[in-house]
Length: 197
Image 1 (cartoon, rainbow, N blue to C red):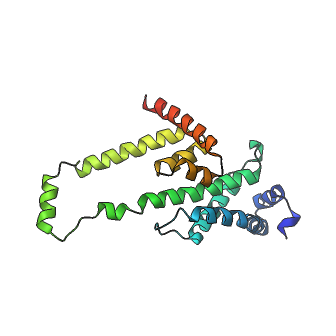
Image 2 (image 1 turned 90 degrees about the horizontal axis):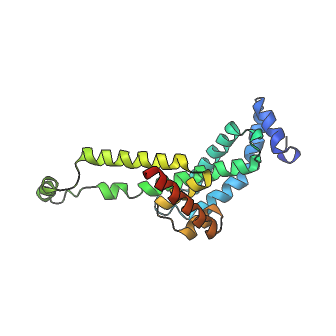
Image 3 (image 1 turned 60 degrees about the vertical axis):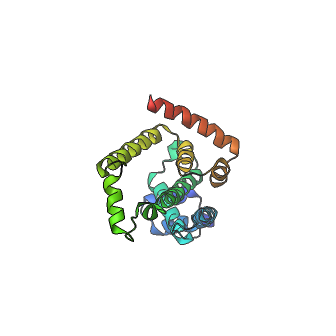
C-alpha cells in the first residue's frame, strides 16, 4: 500500500476495520506535517529540555487523537482536524515545559547559611504552604472555567498568552495574522469577564 494511492477517507475506513497497513500509511503521510510544526515550535524550546524528537512524538500523539476522534459528519476535512490536533498537542507540551523550566530555581532554598534561611522562613509573611496550595488550586480552577468557554483557536491563544508570548509570537506560532490574534484576545477578555462575574 502506498499513501499516494488512497485519500484520507479511504485510509480512515480501512483503519476503522483494523487495517494496520492503513494506519502506518496515514502516519507516514502526516510525518512531514508533524516535522514542519515541530521545527517551527523548536525555537520556543530554548533551555526547557525539549528536543525536536520530543515535539515529533507529541505530534504523533496528536495525530493518534485525531484518528480516534474524527467524525466525518462534522463537516471538517480530516487534514484540518488532524493539523489542529497535532498543533494543539505540540503547543501544549511547549507551554507546559516553559511553565516548569524555572520551577526548580524559583522554589529552591539556599543552604549556604542555614540559620539565616530558617529565620527567614519563620519571619516570612508569605502565605503558608496550605494557602499557596489553595491559591494554586483556585487559579487552576479559574483557568479551567475560562478554557471551557473558549473556542479551540481562542484556547490556543489564551494558553500562549498566559505563558508570556506576545502578539507577534502567537501570530507566528499559530500562523495567523496579528489582527486575528487581537480579535481573539478581545473575545477572550470578554469571556473572562463573564466568568469572573
